[in-house]
Each structure stands twice: as structure tokens, then as C-alpha cells.
Image (cartoon, rainbow, N blue to C red; front, side, top):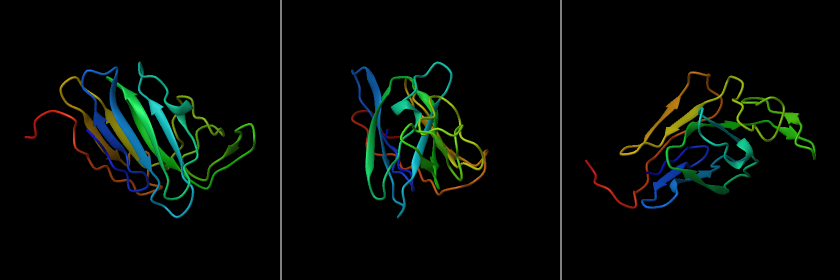
Length: 147
């Protein structure tokens, strides 16, 4: 499965027979930097230290392990020092560049992802408010049947 976020294109492609369950590609479609935050659900590993800077019109790919579940959101208006300390105007995760498993402070538009055994699940949620546009678009699977 593959996903696309408006502010990121979040592509998720299943990789059968591999240790990794899917590939997620975040694409910043904004004209300004966005700092994606990534929070795993309990039992899932932290990916990319939980956050990074994504420059305008750039992409970043991540391999998701089989069974991974978590949230992805965009932080903006961020400023960090060389040690990664600072803050974001929205979606801040404790004043650090690397969220390391922490969630974002509202408001933060969320992309929620769960990789299942037979089926993957994803949605855009406004449960924590709205800060940036996100759209998720599935991308072609490596294998499987379309219903």
C-alpha cells in the first residue's frame, strides 16, 4: 500500500517476503520547510528518530517494519539550534527536533497508519486539531488483489 499526504506525499508500498512491511515516502508539497513528526503506537519502533526537517518540494523515504502502527504529522514554524533544541509554532513535540516517540501538541493534523497481516489501514484525523493540509493517496501494491 502507498499513501500520499498533501503536505507530504506519504507513499506506503507493501513488500512481500521482506522484513520491511512497507515503504513510506513523505513529500513536502509546501513552499516552506515542514518538520514531520512520527509517533509509533505501543510496540512499534521509532522511525527516523521521530522527526526531521523536510525542505520545500523534497521527499524522504522510510522503510516501515511489518505490523508498524503510528501517526505522522507536519510541524511548521520551527526553529532548532545545533543540538536540536527549539520549538515549532504547531505540532511541537516537547521542544526537540527529534520527537523520539513523543506526540505533537495540538493543533496537528494527523495521518494514522496501521500495517496489518492481510490489510493495511490509514486515515487523516483532526482529533488533535488542524494545522496543515494532509491527503493520503494509496499507491500501487507490489502484489495482492484489488477489490
